[in-house]
Length: 127
Length: 251
Image (cartoon, rainbow over all chains, first blue to last red; front, top):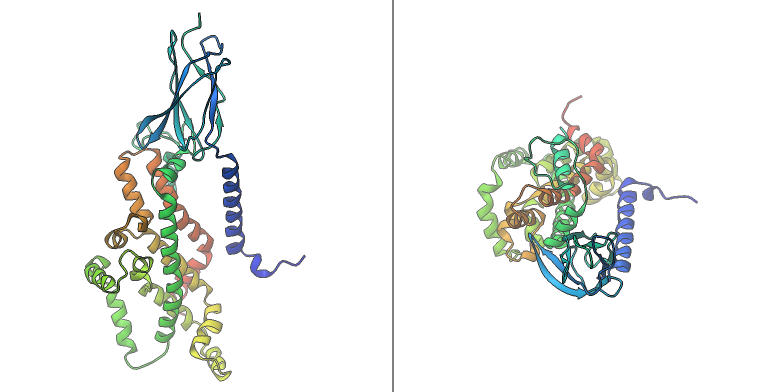
């Protein structure tokens, strides 16, 4: 196949490569932006904590403000929907266990679906 | 020479304070999330679009208008020397000194808060006219005479004979016009009222007022503002340097 001379020029190749990257990235964003944030809450021994309250805080410049709350199910799982921020903090609290450490979650784009790789952990143990 | 650039990039991908002591050469736990913050904290895509539109306008008009002016100045006509002297002396006057009349003229034209108004003072620049003039004067007169005998009008001589032979001058015009319009701060600050018409340098100032720190996000913004100018320069550097040096020596 003969490639026209004008196509084989850096002022064409580089912008076309950049355009391709941008389109591919936007396609990835469109597929993965459902606003879901999910994870698990465990105690110090790694056992799931049921009925714990999980708080989602989102960032506005220098402050993180509380946005949503949800409760964990019997396996300690939680799910937030409708997140539209790119920088979050998650914290869990439960009766008898106090509060977990506050976890910073950075996303690559707004409303990115994310599942926490590490569970939120309380310092105390379940009785 | 590249150390300041490296330091800005290093600060942008880490959250280290730029004044941290002792300074580290390598970034500690580097990440790209500062760029994400910049993209979302302010209307970065809007500023980027505005800067791109204004720069594209400036580049296109610079090439068209400067080529025409340079073609005229490369011919001999009564008063040519006076016009050249006028242009050269105009280069001595700083833009800040003419900014009030420029604002009044733009206002009378009804171009405040518009892309054309933002681009107006840079639509033609004297330095770039001289770059084109040097390139056009390097083209043998016999070539232009032959084109004229073939029946080409002046505008076709510029388009079909001189411009294809002046690629270095075109690249120099693109690089200089792009960088000047991309980095312009004072003029956009004065003539834009609507935040949606602001360009990236104004966005940088606004971002600085929000995040008064010397850590990651601010430097990530600086990198994002700088990147397109560096990209254009790197793409056209060979022609740019040739264009600036052509006509610098005789013989």
